Length: 248
Length: 319
Ligand SMILES: Cc1cc2nc3c(=O)[nH]c(=O)nc-3n(C[C@H](O)[C@H](O)[C@H](O)COP(=O)(O)OP(=O)(O)OC[C@H]3O[C@@H](n4cnc5c(N)ncnc54)[C@H](O)[C@@H]3O)c2cc1C
Ligand SMILES: Nc1ncnc2c1ncn2[C@@H]1O[C@H](COP(=O)(O)O)[C@@H](O)[C@H]1O
Image (cartoon, rainbow over the protein chains, first blue to last red):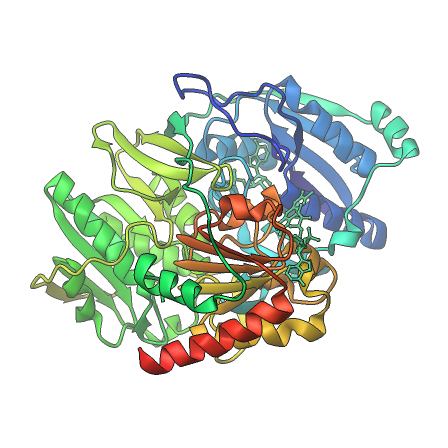
């Protein structure tokens, strides 16, 4: 089985989010980038398929050279090789088109992705990609088993889960549950050394056109101070929620 | 030209968010000076959407569509969009909506903006405001394609009554094959889901252990609320994964979010910032959550919550 894991390189979850004074650009000053947390679950599941079922694992990202540390980290975790498509990740459509082109030239059985990138929270690349390459698609996946060319998956739905079956090739957008938190991988020294020698191919952009563009950013207004209620005066809280906030 | 909304129903009944997308669609149709078409699939009472401004209702009835399939539903929306010459297609942010929308966008070669929270600030260029960076910021996105697919964030524009006399039409789209099939659905009966809930009661590590979750559940019962938790609570196996909210869990956009024994780490707040009113109960007056809250009580959950449950019961019996 040939697996491709799509990695999005995003600001660390604790990053302070700031923008240039005119609001036109995200201010990357002092921002640490990491592998998108959802993609880490997918990568860990891919490693499981590699170790238990002999799958090969390629990781791919669409981005400039600054995204390579995330690919190297994926290699250190155990991926066999990496591909970077040298293009700016402008919008979901453009990223999906870039990925589709590489996928069409290779015969991957399984494309593992994340439910959403935690920067723009687009949640769109997996669905668009699966449609462009005409693979089956399972979103919000919290469990995945593969037997030959048959996949059984568990998907999160509002208020519960759904079991699905599908044949390969398949695109899966994963999240926690695909593996448990404790099964996420941290690179060890040996992995880091080996990663240096693993292939990282840089592929030229196919100049896929973006259909959307972020033109401006702003932040929510500062909220007013929290109204404190005495622990012995619960009636006051109920009164505030009923008459002031009008939520009960 | 038209604006098309997919008004989602479940077991024949419209979801509340269906009325919200219709209300939102009406505003855009008015901005564009065009009509609003609502697509329904197996809705018992499709005409209900006329109360929120649909000018035309296209109704699909087909027993093969009893269980949701994203690819098939996306293809029906695509066919409806082409038939109605839709310029804007609007889909909700339920788990089904999130599954569908990018497929619809790809099929229509449409630019897609998800997490939209307001009417377009301009229609030429077509510009919408979206949540980004896990609710820490907003992103104003221009969509340049002829057809646009918008994913509307829940509880962002609300339900607006706007009765119209809608023309109704039966629609029999081609039902394509899908390689993915549903084998079973597992929902906890009678429980309100986080996605559908107006009120969410959430517990953190401050509750000490799973045996104390009765408090959270009782409070949720009185309020008709969904239950949720912080990430360590689900990591520790005290609660199911599906309840974990935050940056790496579920987003909550309820009217009221009550956080009990949760410190308010940045990753937790990222998932709950979109809730309108936040109440925090925590023993530590320095807990960061108080800075993000609207109402706070410094106190021990094991003392405060039982009182709150009792007082709310009294309140509910009178109101
Ligand atoms: C990559 C990454 C992603 C993450 N994503 C998420 C996420 O999506 N969601 C999430 O929640 N976290 C997430 N986290 C974890 C987050 O950083 C915090 O560790 C977590 O939110 C803390 O959970 P907590 O508030 O329940 O526990 P704690 O931080 O242990 O806080 C417990 C709180 O309970 C209070 N308390 C104690 N006893 C009582 C009592 N008797 N009555 C009332 N209050 C009491 C304490 O004062 C304290 O404030 C993420 C972390 C990382 C690194
Ligand atoms: N620039 C990118 N390069 C590779 N994969 C990406 C990129 N952006 C998004 N993805 C994949 O698509 C998923 C969903 O991202 P998004 O649609 O941007 O929210 C991510 O979890 C990744 O698996």
